[in-house]
Amino acid sequence: MADEDTCRETGIYIANQTMDLWYTRNGGACTILATSHLLIMKPEDTLIIYRDLICKTEYCSKNPTYDVYKSFDANQNCRVRILPDCTLSDM
Image (tube, rainbow, N blue to C red; front, side, top):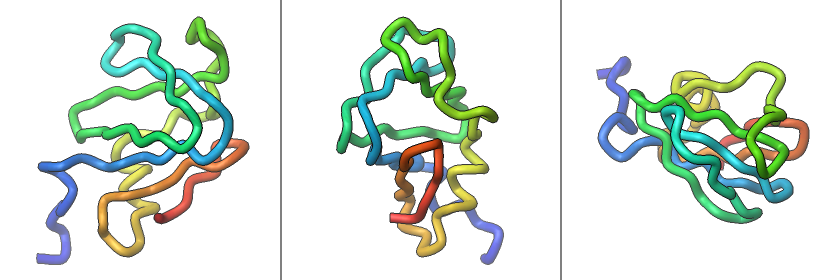
């Protein structure tokens, strides 16, 4: 089925390939996302990535949603990467 979301169960793996960043998931604690580390986002998650360790300055001017990350997964392996300036790319 062409519309089927193959990443729904596992989530989208987001690789940080820029500088150390921080994030909150579903309004939770501010957590570091170190360079070269992976973060998993499920469809029901609200994930906000920040530039600063107090989670006040958002890294992306428009915060990507699960569907936005999924749209960059061209080879459908449930992996994307975040590059400098919040540029998203398939992995």
